[in-house]
Length: 259
Image (cartoon, rainbow, N blue to C red; front, side):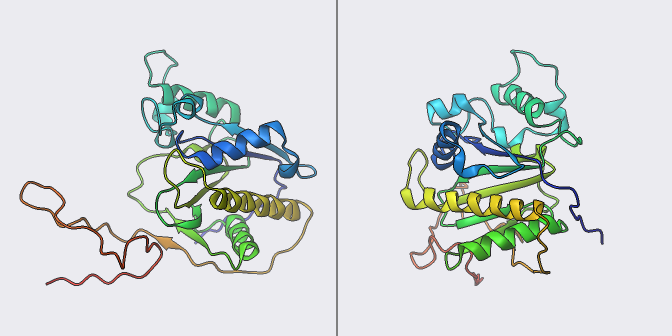
């Protein structure tokens, strides 16, 4: 098994907000940092906050034509620029030009992509490579620094993932999900948690660049094992709801009894 170890210092970091225009915590933080970015600056590190889908942010909707977080594949990025393309595909090409090109030495080292979820996921980091020692160490640092506040790690390294995310332009993509928060709404506690996650992530990068050694570590991750649909009637309509004792119970073990 091959493991990815970072040897060169991290130089360029981007923080994306508004990939989904109705997930407002990242939008709020990025706009704040664009006006006053002192808290995200670290010596020797370029940190660029960026609103990824401004039209969707203005309308407070997830997207305009198609999901921006699903179109960063070679097919869409390689299409000839045209007004006939969906807005998000054109925007993806612009973002790839600014922060990529994807899969090149010139791409940004790290992109933090900020998201909210209506699910009760708390602070969740999204890992896309279980063999990346650098990200594993970073996630361990963030998780430890946030304690006693829980921080979960969601591994999406699975073959059924058919799309490429906005953050996939970077050499080391990091997804951040914090919830529960309704779409189009801001919550102070959720904002504070996301802000702390970015602070600790940047602190880790600074320490790494300064040559600090981190001891071996292990992290607990969650991943999709299978998808279980709701019971449905003969018309395909949902015929059951989640029991009150189970709703909002993300990251909890669930036993399914079949009769």
